[in-house]
Image 1 (cartoon, rainbow, N blue to C red):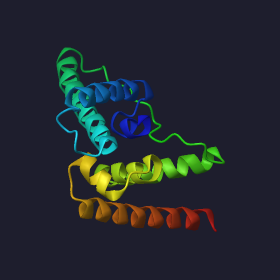
Image 2: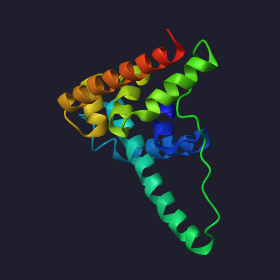
Image 3: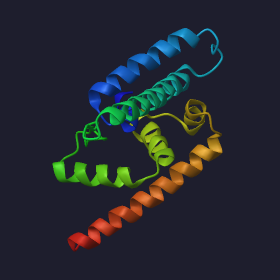
Length: 156
């Protein structure tokens, strides 16, 4: 859940807040969506909480910039936390994920790290399962290309 939220906001502490907001949204709407898959609905609630956070922070930044042009919002560079064998591999995967369009990246995260089915991903993102599947295929193809480029650059 935190990984999913962190891909939107970039900061682990903010991602925790977004997950809490998502759980509140889920709890408030649970009776309305009793027939839906609860897990995919929960991820949808977290997604909307993250998007709302981004809209709020964008408006706040604009207000702050009008007062001081020198201030900027700092975000964590990490968008992917994993127990990968080496830090180098983690950096390569993070860079490859960062290159993906956000629509493809969120499908990859939900499929590989959360373990949702394409149907559940479609429900969570409010898209058809076929759209989720095509975004997943395009993302995997892009990741393969990026990994090949890295292998050539390393001389492998």
